[in-house]
Length: 68
Length: 224
Image 1: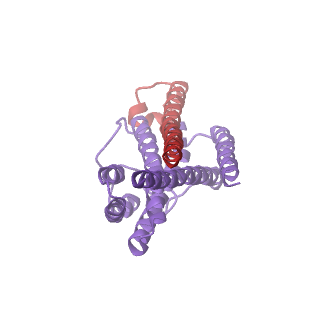
Image 2: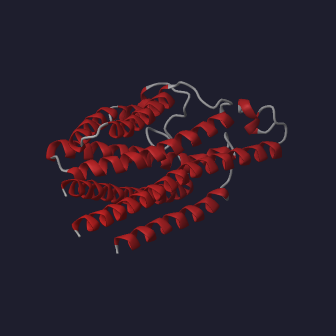
Image 3: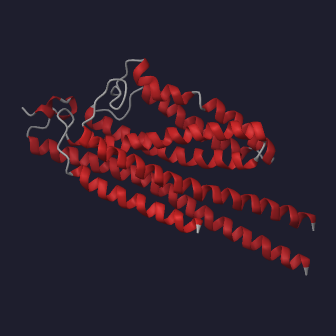
């Protein structure tokens, strides 16, 4: 039995290749999930930046009109 | 100029992360955990960034209460938000590692519970800011709450030393060991994520400046 099969969750998998494939799958899920979390945050920041810029432009235009 | 520096820093961080991910994938399997162990190269740097952000938020909050300077308040909210993003990513990677190695997504041991409490506290901090209208009151309440929330940070860090937890014991300190050639890649990942964090905080700070400008323009419009 491969040493990794001593890990309880992996004990049901028979060969080293199966274990490796399963582990690579989980590793890629882990990395993808982490980067998705950070990417979602970055996208939220980009959206907020656009909203703030629009708001500043709108207020400046309103002020210019009021001062005329 | 400042914008260019930020873009360069962000691009450099992404290049380092891409190069390092390839290098890490070529490292041999760990004896006990196999390939899944390699999540540590991302999970721990994310938590280092999150805990650094929490420390920075604490210092900025104390700075605001002492000086009443709103730049400290802006810094506190910026680092807290970025820190919360890293905390979320750290929780997710940890949970996926746990599913593979323990066979469960979550357990209520001291490290995981204190980490979740940390996430809830800093999410609460951001919600509190949205609930208070007056800027001075908002900044003061938020600073006090942030200092209170910081109590959980040493508990998160030292829980694996103070108590017997299902979470693994320290690998990088308190007698833990990590192969030197693996440490090299680990340190590069810490550096790259810190660089990403700095870029995100700088962008968030710029947004706080823009928000202050909006508040000022609104006051002017109201006065006219």
